[in-house]
Length: 290
Image: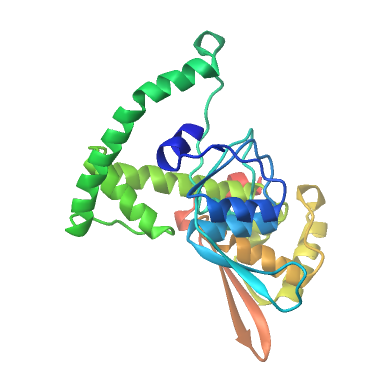
C-alpha cells in the first residue's frame, strides 16, 4: 500500500502508526491517502471516524486551554489498512470497505526491500502514464454519461467510477458489479459472524417468523428462548433494551441480506420493533445460526 500512496499522495511518511483517535484524525485531515500499517483492532470511535472520512466530513473539537472555542477539521482521505486479520466487525465500516486477502510470500519469491523499491521506482513513470491515460478516457466517458448503472449500492460515487474504469480497461461493468457486490455480501456475512447475539437472534426469528413489540419485550423473549432451548453457549445477549436496539440498528443491513427485516415504529406511545423473516433471498442463514 505504500507504493499506492507514493503514486497518489507522495510524502516522507508513507505508512502511519495510529496511537489514538487524535492522531488518526490528524492523519486523515493532513493526507489525501492514509495508510494504517499493521492494524489489529479498530474501536467504535475510530470506526466512526473512518466512516466519516470515507465520504468526507467535519470533526469539531474544543481548543486546548479554552472553554468555548472550538476548531474544525475537514477529514476526507483514501484509507488503506493492513493487518493479519480484519481489524473491525462493525457493519457500517465493513460496508464501506473493499477487503482482500493476500497469500504468504513463498521463500523462493522473496526479495530485499531495497530491490523491490528500486524496481518500483523504475516502473513508476510508466505506471503513472498508464493511470493518466486511463483517467482521461474515464473522464470523457463520465462527462458523456456513457455508462450503465446496475442497482447502485452504498458508496455510489465509488461504484460509478469503478464501473467506468472497468469498462475503460476492458474488464466490463458487469464484472466489476459482480466482484464489488460479492465483496459487500462477504462483509455482511462477516459482520454477523463476529457478533455474539447473532446465532441466538437468527434461531429465534427463524422459529417465530415474526415479532412486533418493544425492545424490552424482545430482550425478554430472547432470554426465554435461549434458556428454553439451552442456547447459552451460542453467545451473550445485551444486558439492556437500549444496547439490544443499538446492535440491531448496526446490523440491520447485514440482517436484510439474509432475509431478516427490522423496522422501528411508534405505536400507542411506545417505540416498537417489527421483525419479519423471509428466507427467499437467503443463502447463508442456516450456516450463521448453526
